[in-house]
Image 1 (tube, one colour):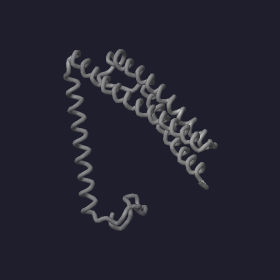
Image 2: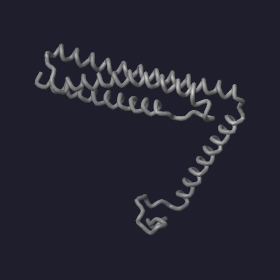
Image 3: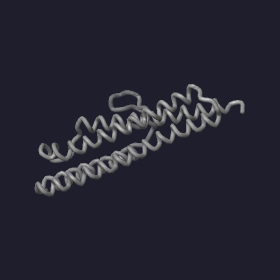
Image 4: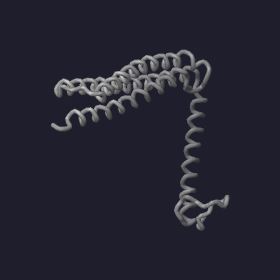
Length: 179
């Protein structure tokens, strides 16, 4: 590929790299992929060798860790959202101003708080579904509708916190301009 052309004959968007360097990178990446595939195969073989009681215990451990991490995330998001509301209201009171950015910042923080509460509830349903239903039908954890709803709510919470934080910064900038 030294001439800057790909095998299909089109110009390459990559830098002009010597073939020795490119093949070394390709070989390293191929080795990493082979190692990953080997590890996945070994993990699957391990799971396949478990007796039903061991599989249930492993499943319960997975669900417990999943539930704890989800609860920690929901707690963090709720604290950030509540803190955002508190900071915005405190600043509005101190500055005796509350403009559009401040109002929308509070609204976004409250939406994030609501998404966090709903995410906690859907995560509970997800874990119950995983514990009581999935174990009968598959050998490994699978996603379900509750999993996807929890992910959507987590992302919505994160995005609204970030947007609320940006609006809080704009509120502070506009409210303190000219002071």
